[in-house]
Amino acid sequence: MYHFHSHPGGAWNLVDTAQELTDRHAEFVKFYNANDGIPAIKHFKSNNCCWTLRSGKRLYVNNAYSYPAVKGSNKCNPSDGYAVSNSYHFHNARTISASTKFSEGSNCADAGNPALYYRGEVKR
Image 1: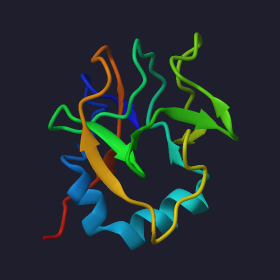
Image 2 (image 1 turned 90 degrees about the horizontal axis):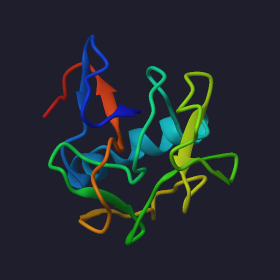
Image 3 (image 1 turned 45 degrees about the vertical axis):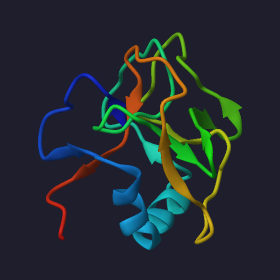
């Protein structure tokens, strides 16, 4: 994860849509659960904490917007920022499974939100 409005550099790409996660559901579930969420690529601060997709829509997890948490504790806009030493899980889904649903919505403000990134090219 990294800041929605700033690219972390290197071969990182923003996740475009919820459908992109759905298309790679099994791979994402395995990665997410093995890492207790999504590691921060670089340290950054946010002013709003809803996960945001390249489309500008908010990522919904099981039909609700979501924000970062660590070990079950809310980490929405931590005052010291998001640390590279942490992985951040969805506050409403510490673990995810084959039944976890991803969708998009607009219920959340835009102010330096965290975003999901992947490394390298997408194989279509």
